[in-house]
Length: 592
Image 1 (cartoon, rainbow, N blue to C red):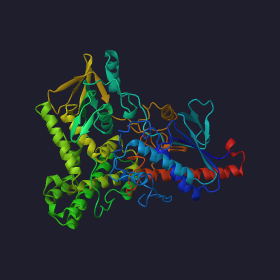
Image 2: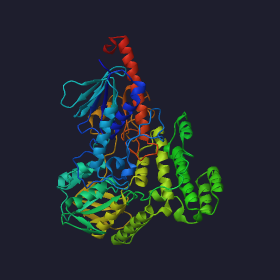
Image 3: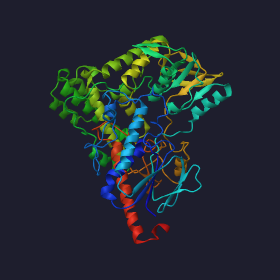
Image 4: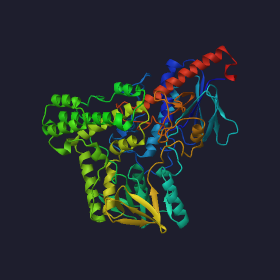
């Protein structure tokens, strides 16, 4: 039989893998037949998240010119660069456009079809529009991938899991709230991809509690306002009368930061500087391992600070009190946070020009408002300030931090095991909504349809209702008969509703303390409890401890997912080539 590769998941990650297989096959797999089986109930390319069957009101949160599925010279990899168009080039859009998700789905489908066309002769792709249920098979032998509705499994020499975002069982506190809702006839909508959620139980005019202030909330807001017939006239929202009233809060109590609304000019910070391959190798070589907060975070802070101040000193020198060379020499020599703060205080007179990551992560820390209405005014002012700053090039040090975050994430992926806190922090600072969405939030707030609850929002269920409070507004509470958990399900192996992942865990695959699947950061092979990589099973995506910011990225920023895809593709092709050679020498090889 020809070698058989099964890829479970045909969305952007599966498509990116296929593109890298096509790019590397001429070098590593020429002249040898191969069957590639793509298993996904959703269309190849777009997958679940970017499919056509969703509202055209839902946008991407990246500008069209910042979206590519193709490698460039900044991607550190062994395979060849295969350049291709960005979304805006392919679609003929203005680069600053925030395209809708359906258009991105069509772009992904085109990338998929181009990858198919680029595969060498003898490599054939088969799409199976079904769910994969489980994987069985010995460590050193062929794997069996069982599909929903199929009595016989697909036989696979190698399996790659590229599953993307998955559904999950509820946390204990969510389960208690859901049980209370069931008992008292309330509405509890659990974490989910918002486009898949049935929002019809949320009735016009009624209060709805919402936990989560990130991108899932933005989708919810859009579908419950414009999606119900409302419209915007300038900065004013004109309701349809079908909207509920949303009371939203979260741990931070504020929305994610707006996307930066200007382009880079001048030289970029020379990254990495304090957290690069050498530091990663040193951390990985420690016999006792490393702790993210103790050992990695100080390097991250140093790197992000360097990116921020390099841009400030080079682009806005009039706002500094020291020569760049002197500052960077002293910054590099600073022994700890206290010494760094003293240097920055002396060199950067205006506190608004200093980088304070702790304050950014806890913007409402210690703040108290005398009334709920006072907090509405305060948070609207906060959002206005954020919008103004993120669209003002005089604060372009923020864009330096953004580039620093991309560089740092690329190094953290190599380490593995960073945990979900880092991903959430990155998303909050670097992957927030387009500026127009925050302006819509302001309009909805002024119209009384969006009400802010505060930081550390607490929700309880008692007396047949849900109640929400926050220390930001002492004494205030709001009651509602509906609660929405506006967030994606936590990507944990043990709580995944996907039987395939749960069975994989039961079969010995290891997980981190936070529940992520442990994989080899080099090529994505699944690790067992003893740290041994499985010779036949690979996994890439947000449910692994080598998660990346996304399956696609902005051009010329290194693309950690592209690097992973290339490493996995080359490892897979090398293994299959060796396997085919052994099978040719011994016709009975695979049967043993």
